[in-house]
Length: 155
Image 1 (cartoon, rainbow, N blue to C red):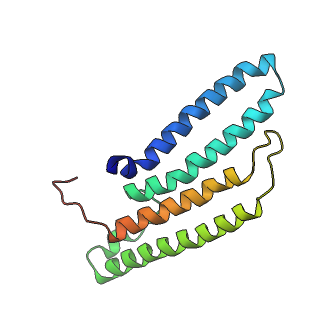
Image 2: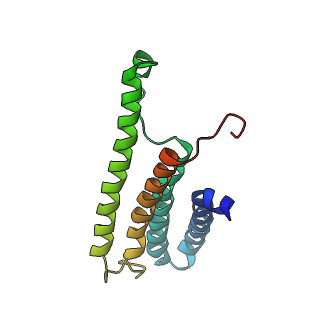
Image 3: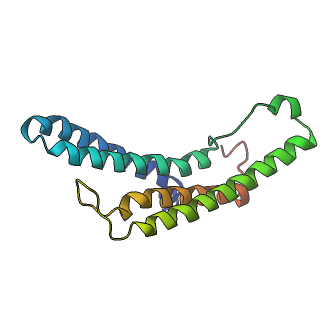
């Protein structure tokens, strides 16, 4: 179970990628037989892409490949300023993910009762992608900040 939780993002992204591939195949074939199906499948593929992109936030934070600026890294390497900048960026990430999570929850709550134009699915589901992604980013940020540090042998 611990392996599933540690690799949750990979499993979710993998499942959504397989579903997206199937939808694109259905769209390509169905376009010739049922032309109106392309509107629905295009909408589904957009929503699935949202899930892949937002759940990728947690994956990137966990792997340490999230957005960063390394412009002045060589100039401040080994100084107190480097330690301050690392601490500041870690705190800034947490604050940013928390603010984005609150905004995503508010946006999702505003979509209650709204359905998609072509497919008719509740719009809360696509908006949940942002909530889930920012929540996973915040969880993985906390794990990286407060979790057990891996030694070289464990990596």
